[in-house]
Image (tube, rainbow, N blue to C red; front, side, top):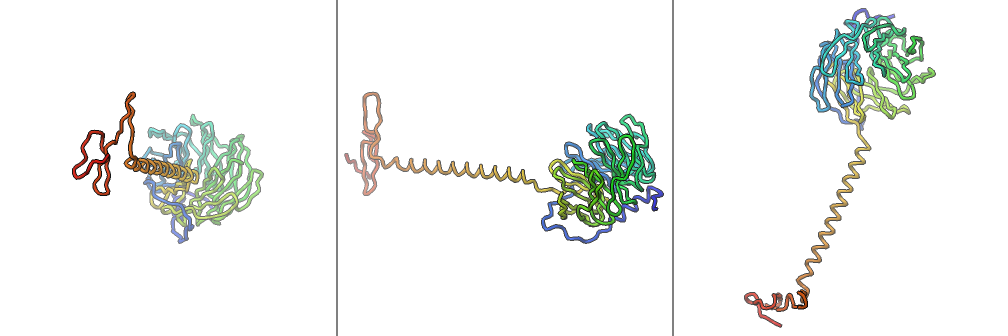
Length: 390
């Protein structure tokens, strides 16, 4: 069996995926842009509730923060060679440091510390609702658990070279095992088993609200689906070298394809397409509350954003425009009617004005010049050139 004998070999493994392979994007690809820059060789990515992006920068041993507006900064430092990254409900950032076999914690203010130790060469990282951290340790084929207080232990064993890791609502842990092409399940009590098989060289892993597991398979360019009872199938195909994987609220799967510099979308029914393009060598992937996709581009040291079309927002804007158009038409109609009424006033022969019991003619004197007629108030002179007629 292949083993990674040093953490430097991991970066070689990752960088070999950055060789670009030409592929035609979907005819309906969503708009893509570079959101902001990062430290060197960003791999893991996560997002907070305000839409700020955080990346684990493998070669500069730090974490970048990019605001929704694209302002980039270094949030804090990490241990050596950070790969995986996650965030808790308070905005604290955690990274797996494959070179120092530990987990860093960085507060929202940028204060950095080592939370606890792990097995050898931790890659994937996840967190539970209580703030416990779990890491997939690729060299020792196990999962570490670190409490919020920093107490470290081995939760359970996995298949060979676990890379990705995720957790369900019951606290069960799942790992994507790169060399044995399967997924391990570890209960909160530490009981370990193989849940199901995957495509070749499974890397990233995610889970839906029903407990179905999905993996990005680097060697076969596809996504596997494993049901909670272990039934395995291929959900759909991807671009070349899918590594990162995420899911939206509708159950659509997205993968970061490191070999073709794009993102694939696979519907729950298995329909596959290219969502949009990225920078060079996308590895990590995440999604915001609006469905926009973000990837870490290890070859360009930046983050791509793919803006996903929002049908609800488009419908709301269309309704707003229609309402504004209708209001403008109503006002135009009123103005036209008022103009027509005002145009009639000079053609009225006489207007009377009641003053107490006295009624007199407002336009009682008729002045004529050729075919032109004007009316003036009683007692007033006709304009020059006009003759008075009673």
